[in-house]
Amino acid sequence: MAYLSDLMGKPVVDIEGERIGYLKDIIVAVRGEMPHPEVVAILVERPGNTLEIPLSHIAVLVAPAISLTRHLAEIVPYEPGMYDLYLARDVLDKQIIDINGVRVVRVNDLELARVNGHFYMANVDIGNLGLLRRLGLAKLIQTVASYFGRKLSPGIISWHDVELLPGNQPIRLRVPGDKIAELHPADLAEIISDLTRAEGGKLLESLDVKTVADTLEEVEPDFQASLVESMPDEKVADVLEEMSPDAAADLLAELPKDRSQELLNLMEYKEAEDVRKLLAYPVDLAGGIMNTEFVAIGPNLTAEQTISVLREAAPHAETIFYIYVVDKDNQLLGVFSLRDLMLAKPSESVNNFMHKRVVTVNLLDSQEDVAQVVAKYNLLAVPVVDDQNYLHGIVTADDALDKIIPTAWKKRLPRLYH
Image (cartoon, rainbow, N blue to C red; front, top):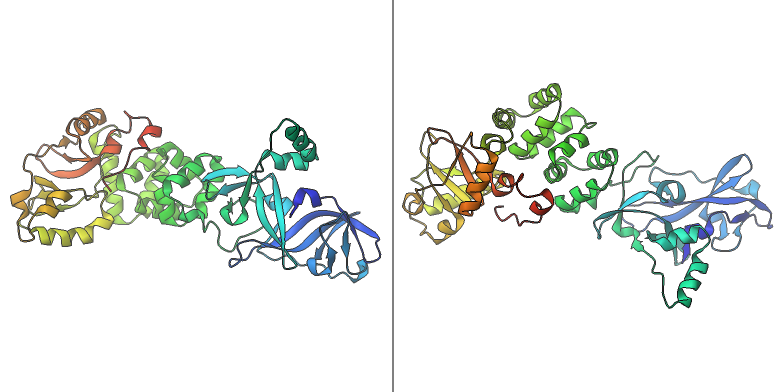
């Protein structure tokens, strides 16, 4: 094993032992099928210029002096590829994402490993020992710590378990953010919260629209607005279409009115209309925090038919824990839970097992009143109606309690209504 900090500044000599410069950087190739980048060249600093030397010209890499297999005049310079990384320039001191630890960390050093004659970028050192090593103090501090019966543990992460943050570096990865996209949206939101707004925006730009939408729903609307500030309107519109209508409305309410209107015009008609309906109400009223994606059926369906309807509607609904029953004019008649549905006989009409005394809130009820109703009746969602009992939407428990329970606590609550 060798560390980048130990190799930096080492003299580079030709086949005759003549010094031609000093090691300034190590170049690795990032290949999608390889879990660890392979060392392919070194960057040598010479008087007045630099020279990329391929690994095939190097006799010994890890030594007091890096020796070559030929004379300076015989060196064929290495041509960097689009998937190559300069470890000191592109990775050292940069922020990366620890996929397993779900955190943003800083690279203090890089560990190289030799396998079957090839060198690979094996691990990332994010601990204090890496910093001490670069200062030349690691051995001294370890000796002192050992004298007092203590041991300094290196903060090592396998390269396979990290992801580079997109930035202004002059490289492109083959599959940017491939491991990031596999994280839970809540974990992604936590990572983004640890970044600057510019860095968070860059990270979101590297993800697909659905992942961006799910992640934005996990952060506060004002932070959402800052993250999409530099994102193209076309992509923001696509993201808004993937978000739940109430979350999309919250985000649009934080943007300048002219941009908000432009984004609504770019959205698909149905999704835009749902959001416009919510924007017509203040954000602290039931009409402003409700979600228009719910499941409503007629009273004449059987339990078996209802299950078929749920299979089609579930992917687009905010919750299917409650199913609402409405007449042909969309007036609320009753409600039943999934438990009620599972216990009913397949041929039984929902009119027979639905609950006809439904707890509701009005479009103009305050968020505090909605929260009190949710808490009093221990509901996971409450339907929102107007004075004619017309069903407009539902308010889920987390949205109702949003201003009453601190955000940090709310995120720890189980989202049982999904």
